[in-house]
Image (cartoon, rainbow over all chains, first blue to last red; front, top):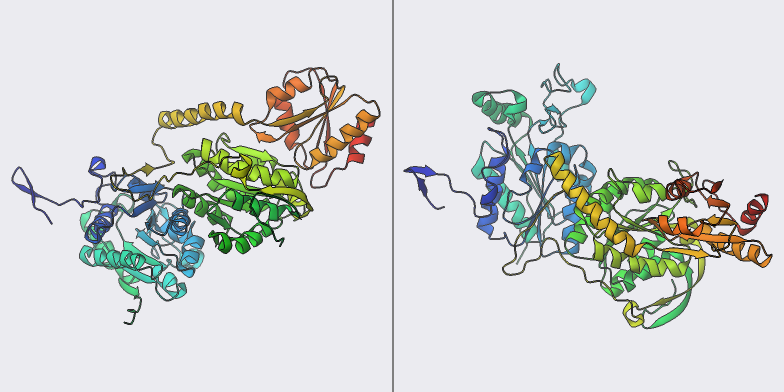
Length: 256
Length: 357
């Protein structure tokens, strides 16, 4: 990593795979998307695959990443990034297909696509930002909203009797994906680990082993209405208590 | 399936769905994405049998939404791709068709219409004409060929890929269950040997060439004005294309007192009704839009100039009629509808209707 100094202040290094022209990015202050995309950017840099990557983003806050990277990118419809990237990879297996989405896109409107892409072991990488709500539309209840958590459509707190429990995406994917899949849940609270998971997911695609999926626990202070301390506590403690961070599926090393 | 070769040309006898699969092979299509729904299933059945022999691919998806979007993914990587559906599947595919309209993707959809609304029948209708021509949440910048014969299914499926990759608007082949399941004779051929040049496809993303510039494709815009510019630019290009691609067929309209307007398979009944009526000395005329989008407005207006009445017959309740009304707005001619949602229309029925006028 290079050291950049401006006015004698050390500047954070920007991944080479980022599109500098569109920085600073468009996410709210305190949003976790930028951290996830930095981890993704560094993983792409370390693997040296930027020329092969086709980055697809969903609808919701994730769409703000449509011009984020210095690579071919496609912004699709809500929930439809998984099939779009699947179609690309099926037609041209030389690409590295990355589908980036939120919890609504992956677990609600596009859940059938995520489920079936996992079942078919599509050789793509899905990276999903879990921030417990629909951010762009103004903070509605999401499949991942925690029990009792207040949102615009659960103003008295999520009632699990009426709306069920939060979706455990990686657990679902791990349960249905065949041998060769890679599944993990990381968190913006541990970027080094998150980058490692994302890198392994991409390596899994490069090896042609199977589907790869990383859920990233993320923050949304704008809609959570939390200050920095509360935000961090929610990500680090509340979310991690319900959504266990770690690797759920690791492909067996090939013999020989 | 028939033992057929695409070398040169060959007379064959097959179902419409088989014809579409062969046409896609002839058009050098790389990959089909599909989800089962009657009456288009055999397009997939024949394609999956042909695919390994011709180095083609197939993906069976989880639903028609996915079939549409995976197809768009394939198209974006510069591969010729298509899908086929019907009825409620056509409804689900409109989402991807809308994205293709906005992003100008050369997507090809084959629609074998079945009865509607809802699940209805798996057999036949012309009730997806409006949906296929205007199904998106926009202005309907798309190209729709309504075929009538198996020869046309072959010719226009090939043409659909050429038009899509030339103009970059989503392109539909609008057939129906009768055409899908019926068996009839046609000539299949290798397009280039017959002088039909196949349009070369180009990748929008994923081409790993040295010195390539990356592309950022989107379908969302920040402001009203930004969107307006995009939609109007599409509209202008669509208008230019419309003049070049509009197709129709007209017989005996010059001196006709009554012009029969039909499309798709119904136009075959209308054509023989026209011939029989003419043989009896009746001043009948025949007009058929082949592209229902763009609709041959001006050509229809010209065709009915001298007519007293226009008999509009369709296996739907007023979908073609609506297009005809729009085309003939302000023209002094009486419209007589013959609307039979979900059932076929025969030559005899048309002649009977004609004789009532």
